[in-house]
Structure formats: C-alpha cells, structure tokens
Length: 108
Image (cartoon, rainbow, N blue to C red; front, side, top):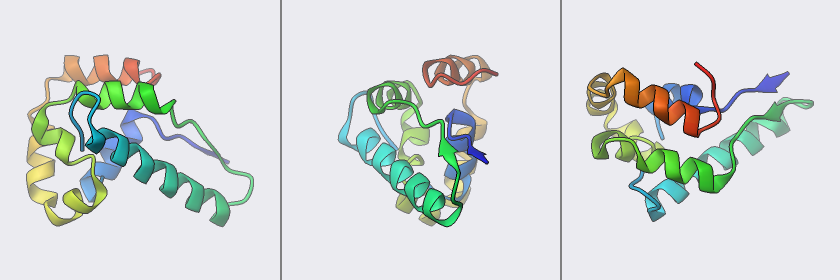
C-alpha cells in the first residue's frame, strides 16, 4: 500500500487539519506534522510507504500559497478553524494550485 502524501493529500488533510509562509517556521512545522502523521500511519499500516516530498521542496511550495491557506496547513489551527480553512481554500486560483502541486512533485 502506498501513502500518497502530495499537495492533493495535504489539501485534503487541511480540511480536517494541517500553515506557512515562504520559508517560514510554520511551513517547516507543517511538514514536521505531516512527517509525524505519515510515520504513525506507516506503523499502523505495515508495508506502507510515503511520497512525502523533501522538506525544502515542501516549505517552498507551502510558501507559495496565500497566507490564509498557509495557516491551514498547520493541523491544530485547521482543526480549530475548519470553516475558515475550507473557505480560504476555495478562493485559491486553480492555476496557482497546479503550480504548487508541480513544486510538490505531484502531477495533476
């Protein structure tokens, strides 16, 4: 089983939880949170592997998102601000999301 953790998964996870600005500590924290989540999932689903991009690549892509969406990349923030995060995500230009997906190494 493969755990596909690219921007699409990050966006989906952000709906229930996970924020950053270009090169910020928040982006690094969001990545660390994802890495911990993946590690936990791998322990519970033996044989799973992750497509989590390198941390520097994630932080750069995270920093390209609008500030409102960046905050929502932080699990604890997003879990406490679900409605705001959903609304912020809806406002992101689809072309920008495609660009960010490409930076994350995710196709489509």
